[in-house]
Image (cartoon, rainbow, N blue to C red):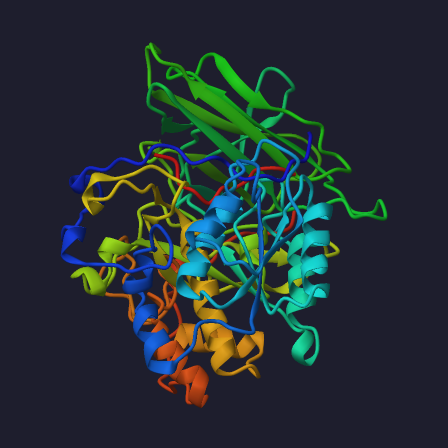
Length: 529
């Protein structure tokens, strides 16, 4: 399979207040900007107050941006002229062509919140090697922090790949050479299935592989019903617990699994991913479009072990629109996987800016598509089993999305202007990176770990809407809560971080029980409609 690192272009965002639960009209709030427009997230996270109160604007801080492209659409010069980009920005390497310039949209948000910061862009490229090189290149250029919104469905789910390793290496450099990383968490919500492979004793007829039994009870069911409406597409990244192939030729999967899509009667195969994985990476990628005029929106998934030992754990993550459903045996597992799950990065989820305390909604409400954490790391980077599974607290924080840019996204009528609105965790992570730039101006001695701790400990607590009761402190849907720029700047300036302890997340949200051990999806960080 061809490895491609890129971001997925934005798609239409429904604007119904019934869908997004808008609490107020935006005309009640005014915004000022040195450019044509300013992100409403500036007010939602109180960064406008923080800049004034602490007399900071990000001056002296270098922010690295990794995304698809910056100036493929030739808008950078006009953005500088209008004040929507700073004069002190540089592009080390851009995508040759075909990009959406999402990197420039991130830059506009950062410039709105931290107008004094210097911005440096590098494309993610089309492979994990290129992405890793971008990280080291920006670090060597002297950036203080790096924000990225690119991930891949071919990145390993159960171990750290080379991009995650590059993040950890640069974030842990000694002294002032350490770089803070801010990752867009993704827009897959909890569209993930995760389970031990359960042999069914039933074999698929094409290659003879034994089918997985989805039913956790005494019955056997080798199919899992899903719903995909007409005219919509889905990409399913399927992986299992096995080592990835290493650069020296070692590692690779000892088994070969396949994933199948059947029609509503579970009779006919409509799509499949059946790569020979032995000695290669344990990943299959299934793409399917339910065309307009289709007679059904119900389908069935099947998973088979074609050869080799039975894997201890299987998992898939779905990239699709909001109407995709897993109708049975749904584990609603974590979808923050790959690069956004890197230990050395702070991972960010999304809350529509209108759904925050500054706009009358307290506590803030997460976007339905904001990716959930809780995916386990079970292997070390060389593919060896960890003595203890590692479940990282992701996302760490939530930040605003649905905000104005001059060109990126689609306009919504609720904000009463004609500027497009940028949805997804890509928009959110740019806000957090900008607040970190303000923090570093206030206190240049902050290291990445301290920055992350301050942002988490000063966040405004939120609740996971899919669990009973209020999840005090951390949860895998909203992290530690909505970023609070005033609280973060105050703590950064004084190094007086809060000391209140936060309870551990509920064990019910943790790793599924399993028995034994057995490259590119851009999980794009703009949501599908």
